[in-house]
Picture 1 (cartoon, helix red, strand yellow):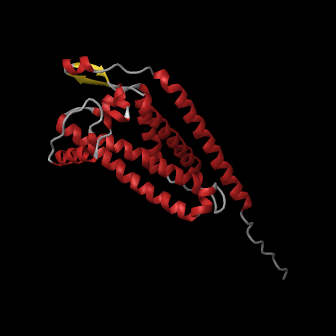
Picture 2 (cartoon, rainbow, N blue to C red):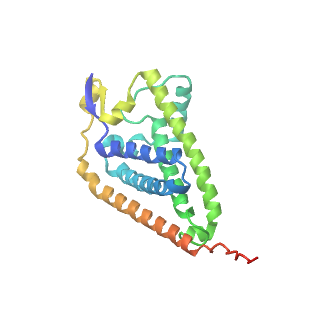
Picture 3 (tube, rainbow, N blue to C red):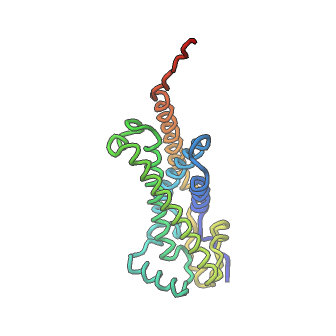
Length: 238
């Protein structure tokens, strides 16, 4: 067996930063003083998801969508095998893990987008609020958030099941980027692409997240400024 680099640095950073953002927004109460943290984490998650989509076409072999996105037939076959506790090792994502990557990316985009446009009063925050309504978007955002909790729990259960059946530490591999493979697989594994390839999409993702954050705060401040003042009740003299 030989330790081989499988996960490149951009993929690993994306994974843990997205876990941090999603975990923060699933734990903290977004109301009151924690609202700026909620907005910042949501905008960061949105930028990370967009970066990962780009990296899925230009990244290293095991980070490419072409490597882990499988047909529904293959995914269902893998699911039936997992239910019988017959989980096989894969160099990259297995079909179930690859499907979860896609689902979590879509859910992150949807949850962050609905939250971004629902954080203000009706009539503010962009054209989506005018079409759907701020209250409707807020309800949809909450529903997607609850569904995200379920998906995160399902993902963690899948990771635990994989370890219990195969004894393969995929969490450690996502930290170090390395897996132990037999000599034949190790010799055939393609090298990782340079991490410098991720600089331009990463900078664009950071810029987009910062812009969305600034616009969300501007819209929220504008909504507060436009809110009607509470009525003043004059005291009557006795």
